Length: 154
Image (cartoon, rainbow, N blue to C red; front, side, top):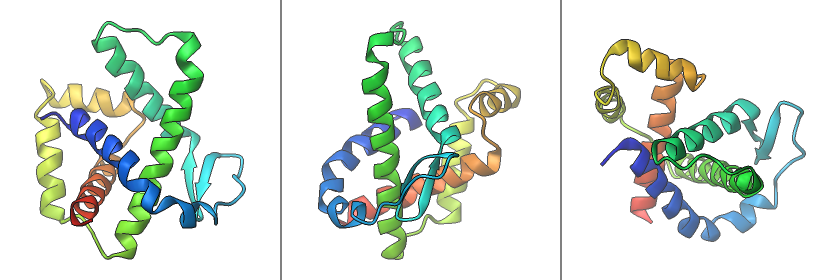
């Protein structure tokens, strides 16, 4: 299964698991500073993170020959923001419970992800296009693994 498919499945699972954790956590949400699109319990979601997710959706839809319809943008943006908030909440809960990704699991997942590209140059181009460094990608993968492990234990 591709990493993107797993990510979308994780987002779907998030939608079903989050209602158990969201009410008390959202009650402490704070006002957003200018460079954040949202703040969740003191953790900010940056405009860059939001735009990266939006670019991923556009890319996914383009591969399916379904360009983004301008009339659907508000709903897409709302869904992206909700998914980012859900990820932060799940990540916070995972950390609170002591669930962390193993470095070997992160390295393995990163190697599998890189293998999807025809060359290292193509991978580097993708990182640049998504406004990520390899360290960012490693961190995001580690976060995904920790969230999935947390969900699996619930």
